[in-house]
Amino acid sequence: MKKVNWGIIGLGNVALKFAEGFKYSKNAKLIGVASNSKNKIEKFKKQFQIEEKYCFQNYLNLLECNDIDFIYIALPNSLHHEWIIKCIEKKKKILVEKPATLNFSEIKDIKKNYYNNKVFFVEAFMYSYHPQILKVIDLLKSNAIGKLISMDTVFGKDVLTKKNLFGFKKRKKINKEDRKYNKKLGGGAILDLGCYTVSFSTMIASLISKVDYNKVELFNKKKEIGSTGVDMDSYAELKFENNFKSKMGVSFIKDLGRKTKIIGSEGELIIENTWHAKPSKISTTGIENKEISIKCNENIFSYEIEILSQCILDNKEKPDFPGLTIGETYGNMKIIDKWLN
Image (cartoon, rainbow, N blue to C red):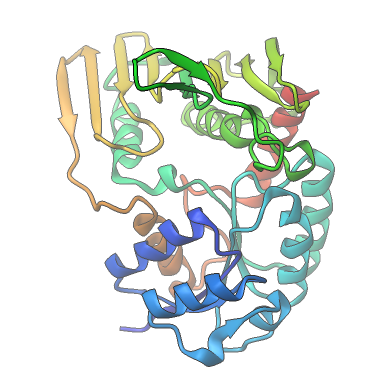
């Protein structure tokens, strides 16, 4: 079977988890890596049996390698725009870790370059390729809860409080260099987690009718700004032209969980762990009361790798739904910008 050859730029934690997903794939192979850290390159080289000739300390060398079809950009958010543009110029297919950009201005520039070159581009929301979300979409399309009315979706964990030996809670000091709390690196709960809730809200709204991003209203914004200048706890609501509504909450300082509740005219659908499917549990009430558990691979990225690789093998110019097209990433970033500012 023909395989799509992948390369990874930036070898942080997410790149490691992503790379582990290739062991489940029949149509994709990780053959190249690039990092400015020699130690990380050596680690990846040994762990994933990558040939020396495909290990690069210069990112551009990976882009210029003719044997590599697809580039996964796993760099800090602040470097996404630059390397997306470079990938477009080199005609490389692009999967960029979320959020695709820091702001709407950057994605606007990318979209302009994209239409001049027409490369395959997709923002990496691994949850959208998971069998759990595909099942949710099937249930909603088959009117399992009737006409869609609204949803409530959250993503948050208190990552700054820890317990000492005696069980007392203590607040950790914020590390200004950590990308999550560094404004220059694209930190903050909205960019790190809110992009998930926005993308899922627009995905579900699109099941009713095509989303006109210019007519999406964002209201009831609430933000708590931390000591480093980024938002730590944020909330907002969306109203779509088709009257579907979504409440969103994201946090670094509250245990909001990862649940989504979708309300229909005839019942409700609840996803216990929307983003990582650990465990994968969907429940519906109303027309039919049932609980669905989905058996799946241990590695959530494996589905993303397999589905996108198949798109390339099928000569598709853009990802299939529910994968995000550049137009949807563009529209979602317009919403995120409103939430941020």
